[in-house]
Length: 96
Image (tube, rainbow, N blue to C red; front, side, top):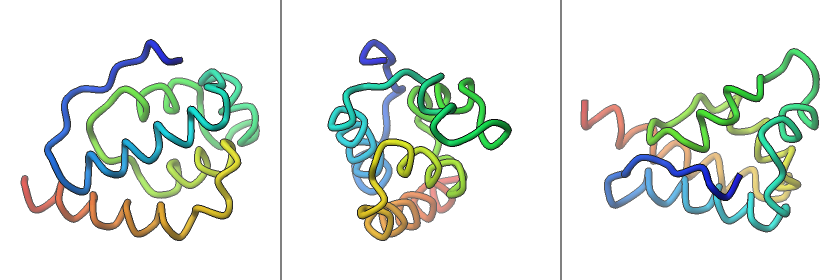
């Protein structure tokens, strides 16, 4: 998983969100996308969706991000991630 490279993101909230997610992923020991999807539970999120979230520079849906944060052991960080996600979502949608 450390080999997955995300496309460039603009400075600001989007970059902050993904930097925090990458840090949480590191703290969790870099589990694979399949392992993350399995931790979430069958039928909730696919390993392909997890992969795309770690690779894409697009802000994901909150539900998917929440699943990943929880699967990486970040339950105590959910409010922080929700705030980061809201700011990133607004920045992305204002830019379009």
